[in-house]
Amino acid sequence: ATPTLVGHIIYEKFGRHLPLNRIGVELRRLGGDIRDVTRDRWLRWVARHLDLLLPALKTELFIERLLHTGRPSRRL
Image 1 (tube, helix red, strand yellow):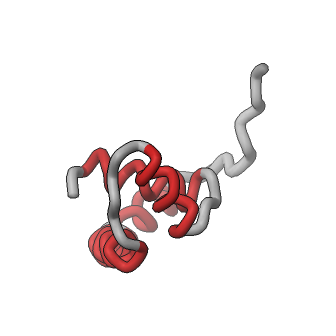
Image 2: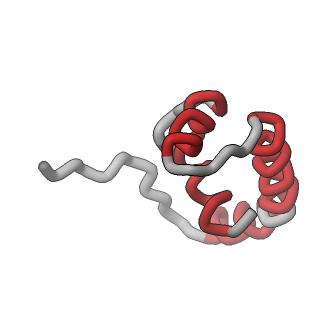
């Protein structure tokens, strides 16, 4: 798996809220055939590695005196 492909799957799953089977349908339509279990394994691998960054992220976030957590406005 390339970083671009894994990033695309992450975006589809968490950015667009698509289930893995729908992502599979889209990938097959584009010429790729990657099983649901394989995509799930990739997502778990990424989650384990990103989890290692969480303590550092929390430290950096809590150094700030003010955090803005609102959603950015959408422009049409």
